[in-house]
Length: 223
Image 1 (cartoon, rainbow, N blue to C red):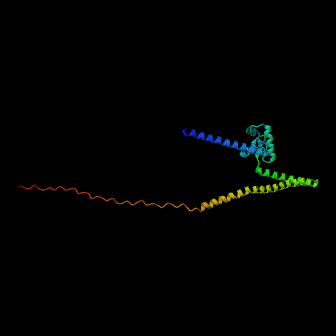
Image 2 (spheres, rainbow, N blue to C red):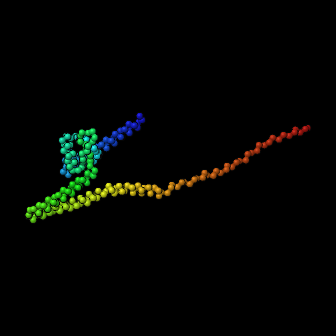
Image 3 (tube, rainbow, N blue to C red):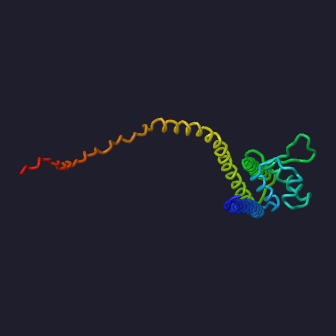
């Protein structure tokens, strides 16, 4: 083991711990937000878990993960089933219940809200048709009915817009891929750098070699 291995292992462990803390923080924040909206905090924690993990998740795994009683987990999973956020699924060879996040769960919630608003508007019509009321009571009911009708209409437009987004995303993928291909094909080939000629070497000047003096041999002068 090199000296860097313990350092890398420590850094990996730290990142894993930070990632786990971020997940738990998201789940707890989701629980608090759900509580402010009128849902039990445990239901909000369950929604956070299913948003992260999707499922299928067994009933026993949920109880262990939540550190809550089985009765509490059972009550809140049934609540989320009624709201259309999760669904009960069967797993081959398993006797306990499993749950998964439903496809487009928040669209289902919006559709249920639309139905509630429309139902309230119908109640007001039936009441006004069956019973004469004082003018002030009628005015309050009509104001509430108008609120619910406008809300239902606005939510219907929102549902239609959200339902189109997956189609638009699916259509955008081939277009983006084709655009990438076209841009790559349109790029001119990279120009090769011009070949550089090696600098001409100047011929070295050669110095003339000094000629050695030749020895002159003469005859001795005779006396």
